[in-house]
Image: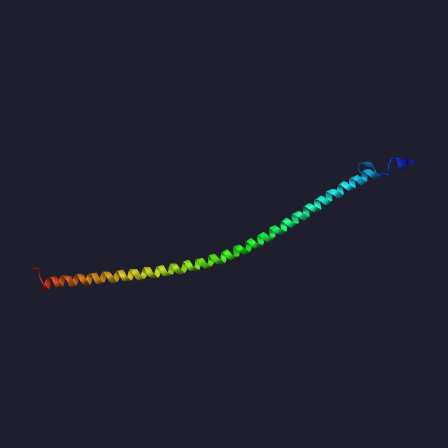
Length: 118
């Protein structure tokens, strides 16, 4: 066995020389880290897809609510117009009743003049 067998095949690295075994362990550790990162990214990707689906669903629900609110707004506006028309009608009826009362008052005065109380 030679000198290089004894050192387990040396590799030149930035930090100095390392054995093939150390280099393999380093590569394995890095590969495990990469696998963890890939797994985490895949999980986060799935979570993101689920969140996107939820957001899309909520967007559709919001659109439906907006349509519903618009319809309710139109109904409220129509009811307001009805109330306004009824108010005008009541006001007109009130004026008519005033005129009727005035006429009745005039009739009453004339009746009092024609038939004095006994």
